[in-house]
Image 1 (cartoon, rainbow, N blue to C red):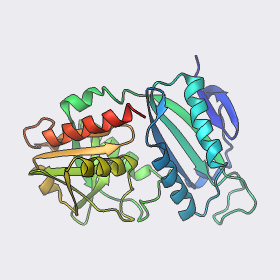
Image 2 (cartoon, one colour):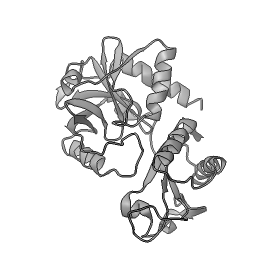
Image 3 (cartoon, rainbow, N blue to C red):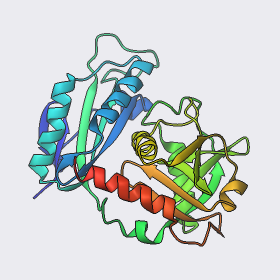
Image 4 (cartoon, helix red, strand yellow):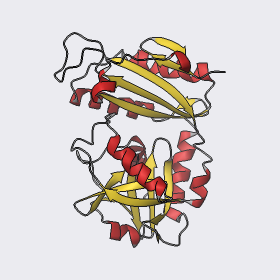
Length: 281
């Protein structure tokens, strides 16, 4: 069965899903996106993702492409039409279609596209072994709190990681880790999780938000502060969070083993807690 995508009100086979060459997302990366996990055919953390979408749209002075009820209904319809049990729904909103000009065009309608991807989120084999990361300079713009489709710098960082045999790159600015190319970054020292505080320098991850709540409910201490690559090398544990990986252990940073070179107890506990909640969604 061909994958069904959504394009501006229509559900179409992916081979027929097209956007205009004058779409501002294509011409200027003038758009935002969200990725919502699906477990057991149900949306996970959907409300948090839509709250972040609303913020991104407001920061870019971009109109909603439909009502919030219609957007949820579209997600549910994509799950049903594709028989999606586990994976993600990617959705993207752009300012719309207009002749190429830098200033905002007047009286155009925002564009909305979305599609599913099947992924093994719950029983991800990487979670059993842990993954490797490398560090790379953070060369992005200074509004990383907006979930923009402008992702060339993360693409370059991710490619560097893959070429070095790693799964992710942690970006470094002014000597401190900001975040991963598609994830938030954490280290563990003793019984304390350390992660960078929210600002315009990083994205407010929805999985990060859920992690903070679960940690608080289960008396796991989190300290929000900057940390260096050297602190990551010396950490007892390290991990990342994202919508498509949930809580993922890190066992090596820049070729240096973290802790014992295997997923640690704090990370394992947090992943178990997150999965337990996601499977109840």
